[in-house]
Image 1 (cartoon, rainbow, N blue to C red):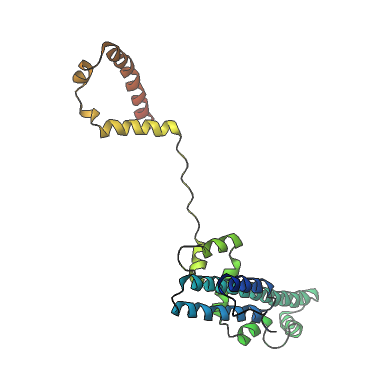
Image 2: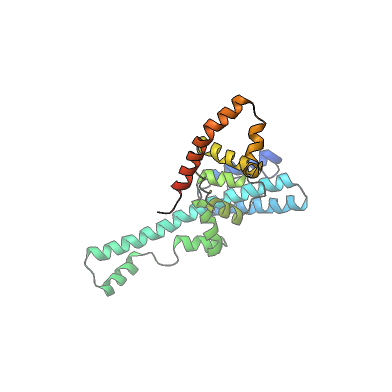
Length: 234
């Protein structure tokens, strides 16, 4: 089956959109693989031409096609597993011995390579490459699209790595009153009040200011002592 038509002469964005649409229409491995190979060639051409924007668009198309190849290969792999499961179920249904089970499975399973293995062989896809394409297919669509928009030009390995990295769990938000207390104590330290002369500071205040300080200082001391007591080992 041939690949969906792709207008090779379409410039820039038109070519990009045309190829992306063609990828979505692919229903067979060879269709998606053909578009992938064309995009790879375009990517190399634009790299030589030093057209960075076009090279990135071609890389995006290539990765979308590789992801589609991976989706189609996953379907073939699931079909292989389903055939094996049906053969195993048939053997259990007749209470076959281990030797008979193998015989029934061999008869129930189709002869020759599986569709999955045949697809890899026919289209020159190594098992390692097939694994990468299926890894792309396993990435949630939102994560895949986000990886394509990363600052650097996307690559198969890079997209897989970026999509599998979990965002760090944000630290719990510290309440405003706890932040305020921490900040004020840091201010005392930074501004040198722990080593300042209390008598000098009091003499420089007005009577009203001095009265407030003398009234509040014991309360502050009690509060700070309670903080220290809260942290003492039991």
